[in-house]
Structures are given as C-alpha cells and as structure tokens.
Length: 607
Ligand SMILES: C[S@@+](CC[C@H](N)C(=O)[O-])C[C@H]1O[C@@H](n2cnc3c(N)ncnc32)[C@H](O)[C@@H]1O
Image (tube, rainbow, N blue to C red):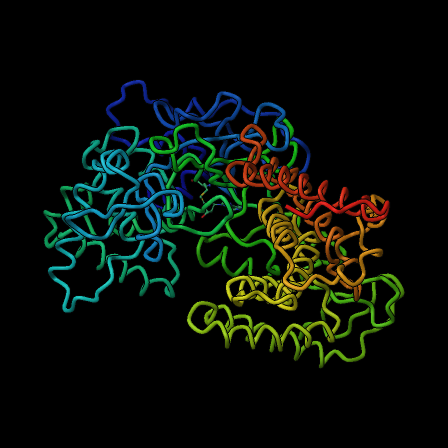
C-alpha cells in the first residue's frame, strides 16, 4: 500500500481492512468490523481505533494492542500497567546485518564481538565472519544467496579494493531473498509488506540516494531484467522504491550492549511503534540470552518509566539531546512527519538543549538567543543577556566545529581533539549550560577521543581530564534524559570505569590524611555537577575508588531500567556487577591499610 493510499484509507477508516493484502490467501482475514471497537478516549487525546491483523504480529503479547490514529497511523498501546524496566517486547529481528566496519570484528550470525571468541571467515565470499560452525550453519539459510551475490559483486568490480555493498543494500537483499523463499502470502512477508512506505511523498532531496540504493541493490542481487525483479515479487520500479522506502522508514540501528552501532536490522512489530522526543520506551540489544549463539541478536523494547493502561508505547527514532530544529528536520526528512510531542510543541519554559546561565549568575537560566529572538533574559531574575553576538558566534562556530570534529574523529583524531579542546572553553565562556547544543555534543566527542587516545604509559593529567569530561557529559545528559535512559546509564558506566583505572601518579600519596576513605567525606547528596567544577576533582586514591564505586552503583540501577530489569541490565549490567564486587574488595583493602597505618600497625599492601 502506498502512502497516499494509506492516507486516504485512514481518512475513510478502512485502513486496517485494506492494509491486509487484498490477495491474502488467509480466508479468515478480518474485515472493517475489526476496527469497530472504540477504546476509551481521554480528553484532548487523539481518537484511535483498535486494529487487528489476522495471522500477523503473533509475538505481540495480548496485553498490547495495535491501534490506528489519524495523525500517526498504526501504533502500539498497552492495556495494562507496565513497570519501568520491563521488557515490553523481546524478539529476533526479521533480518539484521553488520555495517562494513564491523564485518570482520563481529559474528554475522549472533553479532558477538571478536573479543569474546576468535572468528572464522567464510571461505567462499571472504566477507562475513562467524564464531564457529554453529553460528555459520545458523546463518546459512540467509547467507547462501548472499555468499553468491558477494562473490559476483567482487568478480564484477573494476578493482580488487572495492568494498562490499552497504548494510542497507545487504539488509534489503536479505529481505528479498527470504521473502521469495517464504512466499508472498506468508506472515513473514506480509509483515514486511505492511510496513509503512512513503514512496509517493518522497522528498526530491532523497531521489539521488534512493536511485543509488536501487542501482546497488539490483546489481548486487544480479537482477538485470524486469523478469528478474518479478521473481522477488517486484512488479515495477515503484515496488522497488517501496522496498527502499520501507527500509528507510522502519529499520533500526543494531547496537552492542554499550550502544555502539553495529549495523542495521528490521523488525516489523517493533516498527509499529510511533515516535516521541520524550519517549516512554527504548529499543536496545542487551545480549542477555541464555544461549546467545542460537538466540542473539535479541531486540528488546524496554519501558523507561511506568506506563499506564491505555497509553501508547513510544520510542524515539532520533537523538533527543539535539534541539528542536534539528530533531524536526531529521524527522521530516527521514520519516515524513512533524512531531507534536510535549518537547516539540514548546510546553517547556526553557529547553536545556538551548539554554545559557544567567549573565548575573543568579542561578537561573536564559534561552539561547537566536536570530529571530535575539533579546533574551534570565527566567528567574529577568537580567537581559547583553553579549548576544558573542553567544551567537560561539554557537555557530561550535556547530560547525562539532560537525568537522565528528567527521575527523577516526580519520584524524589529533585534529579532532584540537577542535574539541579549543571550542569547549569558547562555549563555556559564552555561558552555555553543559546540556546545551553544541556544547554537550563537543563534550561527548572530546570524551570519546580522549579515551581512544590514551597514551602509553597513561598520564595522570590525561586520565584526570577524561574523568572531568565524562562528568560534564553526565551533567549535560542528566538535564535531558530521564533516569534509566540507556544513554545516561552507559555514561555512568564509562565514568565509573574511568575512575577505577589505576592512577599513574596518585596525588593522595602526598595527601594521604585528606583522602582516606571516610564515609562522610563525599556526601551522597553532592552532585557530580558541583563536584566536577571543583579544583580538587577528580579525587585521588581511596576517594577516587569510592567515586568509582558510587558511580557504578548508580549505573547499575539505571542499567536495570534501560536494559531491562529481568536481565539485570544485560551484558553491561553483569560486567558492572563484577566490577562492583572487585571494587568492594579493593576498598576494604584500602580501609584496612589506612586503619593499620593510623594505629601504627604494619600495612598490608593493595591487591
Ligand atoms: C516506524 S513507522 C511507525 C508505524 C507507522 N505508524 C505505521 O502505521 O506503520 C514510522 C512512521 O510512522 C509515522 N509516525 C511515527 N511517529 C509519528 C508521530 N509522532 N507523529 C506522526 N506520525 C508518526 C510516520 O509516518 C513515520 O514515517
């Protein structure tokens, strides 16, 4: 069904009936009466109709239902109360592929990283790698045609250094091969065909990309005539564009447990979930299966807060730390809608993504001045921002620099670090809050560059600066993301791990009495934000261990929400649990050492 058909059908309330393929062989295919039931509507909330798709979406638990609304089409609603940290959905995507840079570092079947096992390469195509024979045979049904296509791709290549096709092309090809094998009437294929396509409303700006994708797909799959397309159920070029549009609108980045993107995946059930910039759920891959080889990669939709019966499950398709204008641009360009969530409809007094501190330092905040709204004042003491041009320039230079530095992060990390090092103080001086764009983006990038450029041997200055940067990133993220958001949880894990790194030249050796472990020396109520601006931060010795411990403890609580309570935060939750145990031991050794020293007893050494 094309988008205009879909739109028209929504208007006539016949969407559910007509979204079941007309030629569906299933004689029990429901009719329009399936949509008849009206859920109870709360005032001010858009009306929805309950929809049923016979034979489709079988893994959808009965506590959830698909409803259709005028503005956002189908979506998933809950009939029951869902607690924060509950895995609402847990399933294997229909298809998943690794992106080019991860093909030789991760298993193409279970997506485990090479660090957990030594990978073996497919001896025919030389492109995909597997943990072992079990993973290879688990993937064989999918890889069989792919292997031939990859070999053909390299044979036809003008030179030997041609890369395999992109993850998008390999993912779509896997969809088409499996769809052909299953048959067009099979539920698997119908779920793919029911995913929303925006073919008829595509922006001219995306024509070129889509044409390239179509050409690469046709070439890779060895299709050279309309008859070749027809064997995959593609009766026209429009059908080909539909596949591409469905992929772009409905695919998910597959990530490792610490949220590093690994590739692309498609799950038609998860793709039923609509977007909000203030979501109540999140899509993660926690890697918590008891039998990873046969079960992973498992995609989970986890509730980030308690969700009430009758609420829609909403995830975010984009980076919600960005300001409204960039969010709206991406949503419009890639997903063809204008978001009207709480954040986008301007219900906030002040958006921490676009905020600066009061010029009089009264503790209040001012909105960042923008061209159309250059006169801004503190929302608390009403002091006006005078140096608007300076702020303007700092933000502009910062945005350009962030774009440049992101592009250089792996190509030229030294240059990228120079940019982040120079730009962060400019934005700080201009008064931006740690959560404001582009300061937060630059801080997070700086942290990532600092970690990947750890010198050997590591220096105290480098480690301390990385810890300060990680702390500022958490301060910024905490103003934007709810407790338990996986991004915030991972930021805490990173800070905890950094604080637990052995100090190259610990300050405490000369200041032992000030830094001994004292339960009251670092009040729990003292925020990381206030500590990070103190000249003695990060602490050294036992106090640093304590920082690592409390940070990882906090991370653990958050991981149990963002990556699921039942799996105790997935693979990273387990890693953090183990780290906490070894830190507890280390801290008790320190405590004994300090106590013995104070009592004049012989000291036991650390470790
Ligand atoms: C992944 S699909 C979500 C399921 C989709 N509603 C359907 O009927 O198949 C993404 C598409 O849903 C629509 N959508 C998602 N969230 C929306 C929102 N908050 N407001 C309006 N439309 C939305 C947009 O058309 C978007 O391209």
